[in-house]
Length: 216
Ligand SMILES: Cc1cc2nc3c(=O)[nH]c(=O)nc-3n(C[C@H](O)[C@H](O)[C@H](O)COP(=O)(O)OP(=O)(O)OC[C@H]3O[C@@H](n4cnc5c(N)ncnc54)[C@H](O)[C@@H]3O)c2cc1C
Image (cartoon, rainbow, N blue to C red; front, top):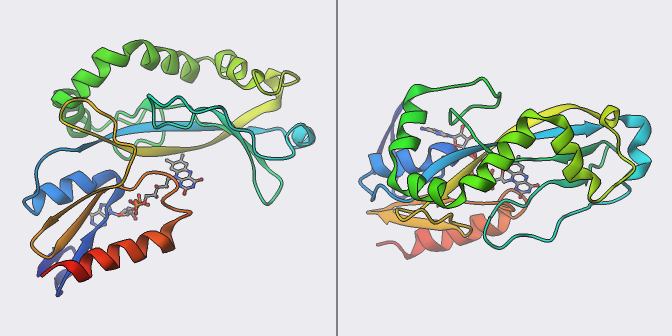
């Protein structure tokens, strides 16, 4: 295999393409089918004011909604004692759109023109609208948090970091919640590696290595 990169050509016997938010683009470039495609969803966190961290002494998770692969707003007490609250899930206007105002016309056009996204949006517009309200109104975010910790007040919430979830969406608008692989020759495309892919990265590496071994 010859991989053309910004640092020159790399020759390899086999390769794994695992490009997160750009994984569908790399797969397409290699000749794989267009779907599933990546639709980026931004997730924002608030930080719990440090003096109030005694309110959350462990991890607090909602019961998952099986229709959505998003976990939902939860409470994460980290090893340094900081508590993260969130994330929500709103359509990102850019694949690398970590701020509300980030917009990439090509990314946005690709998302809106994708039939799978149109089907998804038509089906779940109500949930999407609720998420957007929660994104814009701190009081709505707080209301979701108070379902678990009623003592929380608006002043307990400080601005926190954001992440962008690479959500793989199929041609008929289905949100993939499992790993998605395809191969082109001796290239293994990892199109969807959802959470907890980071936590499970060593186990996943073994799966990839086995799949590479099986390629002719
Ligand atoms: C807010 C948030 C919280 C999460 N929390 C957890 C958690 O607690 N536990 C957990 O296990 N998982 C969590 N996840 C999920 C986890 O981050 C992903 O499952 C995991 O990162 C997927 O790994 P990946 O290698 O497929 O993609 P990534 O980690 O995104 O890696 C892709 C890499 O490819 C590179 N790349 C992209 N395009 C190209 C290109 N054209 N050429 C070369 N390189 C390229 C990128 O720079 C990047 O380094 C979370 C995700 C989000 C968004």
